[in-house]
Length: 453
Image (cartoon, rainbow, N blue to C red; front, side, top):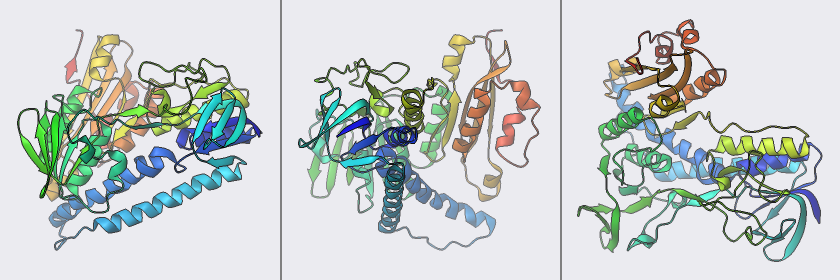
């Protein structure tokens, strides 16, 4: 069977590319060996966010008392959450399948391997041919097998298979996944120890925001072990004993390692077919998501550019527009709104202060730190923090960084403003919505720091 396009990988990027290409009249097949929806839908963004919601009710119950509500000993049931979460994941998978089928995409279930740039064998049995091939196989958790007892640990995929809530948890890592899952467990009542080799969490984010998050994590009661690594894990009758580099021993029911992700490029026959990989083992592509072979493209985490679901979707859509829609669209990988769903959450878009100073030495930094109105009555100690970075030479806002309730939602809207090259004067001219936390964004009049005077 010969198709105009064969997509390997049924995640967000691959599914979007397949549907859009089919909409242009292409004959499309998609091959997926696990479940449709990819990491985001099945064991990532969606089930994680549902668990984030669950964990934040603990704070809501606590704050309710200050507002006159009597909340008597609320009880949490892990099994109920898991059941309802998995039902929603199952529903979404069926939505993905239905949308592909409605678009006329032929779905193959199984493992794909390239015989050459135009031939794919599925489960080492059935061969199909592709005029154009798209690799969209995503990424998987990094596995560090050098530590004695590594086989006793779990990764982020395994986290979503837990049938019972662990009471004592050691989480290794300082990125999105480690922090988000650590916060979920902490606020659901587990004792959490976060182990990370650096001094601060979230490498690559604005340094001031990183410091703010560390303080919030401490405030939540999480145990932080910075500058440390796990050196050994031993199974004992009472659980797991975890040794750190400084000689400290921790006791846990599970050890969750979230130390990074790596592109899914193994066992696909990519290099045998002549497709080049970069130094990180990712598929090397140009600005059009095209590999060194003209008929082969790749999008999403397998290319290790910007590893976020919306970016995979954007890349997949642009690929289909270009190859089958006769358009010429490149994807902007530099201005990326994003949120980290810790508790409290982070919202950010644009340059960090450290990055901005390289390009814009005459930089004004506007900052605001305050207790949200809700906390003034509830007594909750968490603070909200906003930061705007402004290029003084043309008044353009080049960065936004925030921590606090709903700041992820704010980063989406600020992203639009930065895309339109909004100025600080435009923010100042915008009427505030009162009382909201977001009004701080249009009422910060004087810079806290003026670089390059």
